[in-house]
Length: 100
Image (tube, rainbow, N blue to C red; front, side, top):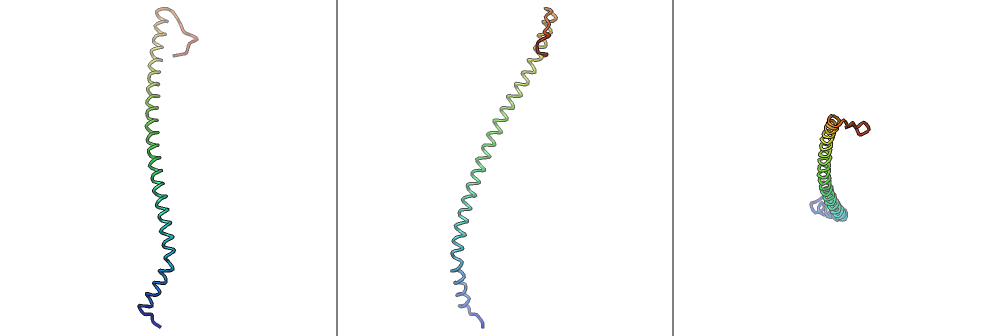
């Protein structure tokens, strides 16, 4: 038995009719997935901005910390010089004070 073109078209129409609910369901699911992907992209972009801000804040903090460490080192050196001058000129010795 051979199938005619009309028979094949009829089979195709039946298959299309049976698959239509599945196609509709898949399209709805894909729309949801696309929405989820868009939301995830938005969240990732927001996280990138927060990371950038945190990086800037951390850089500023480290700059201030470095500046304070350098200033403290300079003050320690100046204090040693002051103590040395006081010892030499006035005979004052700071034995119990911090060892700068």
